[in-house]
Length: 156
Image 1 (cartoon, rainbow, N blue to C red):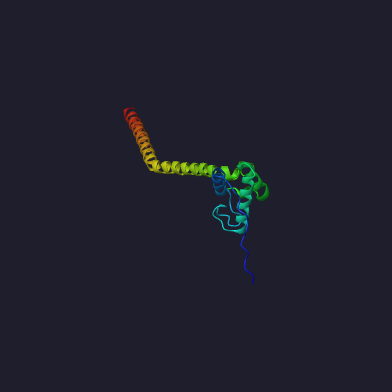
Image 2 (image 1 turned 90 degrees about the horizontal axis):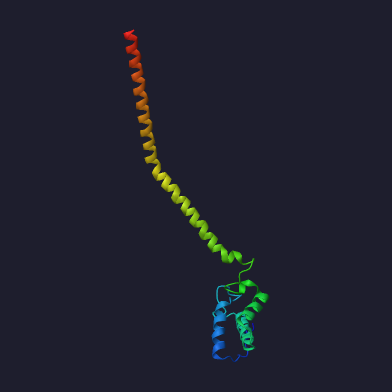
């Protein structure tokens, strides 16, 4: 069995400002092997190669956007932790907000149903009381009519 050969890439000389930009870029780029680590945190061979490529492009004077564009063209939107807003990435950007709005709507509907259900026994009691009063009044009027009819029959 052979020993793995360590990755021996020549370091690129950078000034302090470029080093700061480089650290920021490493944090914004995802390791394609590890997928849950940034380029700065990964020890994978591909991550080492990508770090060297980013350093080289930075030393040549490429802007951060040019470097990101090159990575996206080569590896796709997945390489960036914050992909640019496009039709293909809209779900990534808008999905959480749509989900939050849908959740708020469902919560509001459930709360409204609970309020209606809590008020229903009171409303039913009031309604039953109203029916009872109406029934008593109708019975009273009927009784009065019967008495008046009975009195008229006796008088005549």
